[in-house]
Image (cartoon, rainbow, N blue to C red; front, side, top):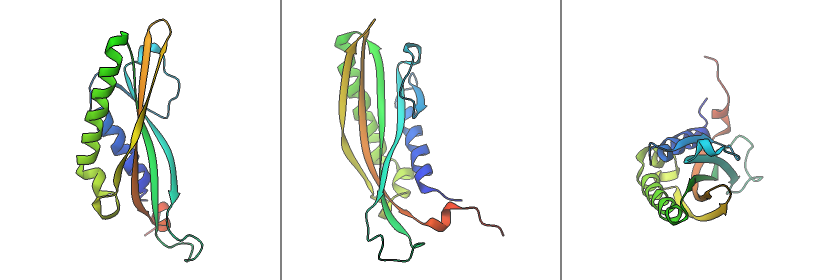
Length: 151
């Protein structure tokens, strides 16, 4: 079975975790305890077919766009949160856009686009902040590759 979606997500998580060894790497966890910060969290995100679905045979290869989000979360002094989040964001964008393994999983080895980011900060017992960084990965989905085949 070859699920390119999972291959992309697994590699993206590895790339994100390598940004800073002090980050606790998680996947699809919305609520993190203060003890888990600083953290990097991969959210699998959405995907959709971008071609002429409905006009071709059902088992035909389709082009799919998937938009996962990488979130960096930190608890720190207010003056340090923005610079730390922006540094991780910049390192992540560079790492993702230059990763040959990720590129190799996409259409024509150029199917990665940086989509943008959004920050959030809040006060609790300490100042907490986060930034979500989104990318779109365009890849070929072959329905036949999604099941185990017996030899």
